[in-house]
Length: 62
Image 1 (cartoon, helix red, strand yellow):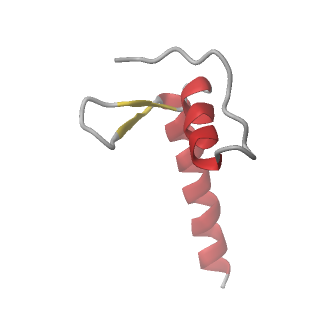
Image 2 (cartoon, one colour):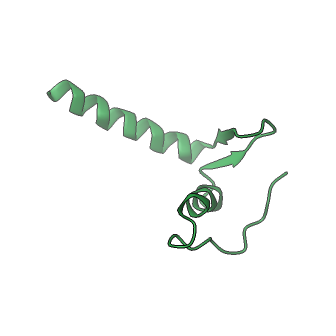
């Protein structure tokens, strides 16, 4: 199920594929058995939590 990436797709060539390649290569998430879904890995979830915290703080300031 896991696909081994040799190199990233060029961002200027295909932005969407570049983003997916980057997420997989950085081990932030991986494809799941359910088509169209990804499983967020620990580093990816940590980034998500930090983003949420920052957004919450910004919303509370306004």
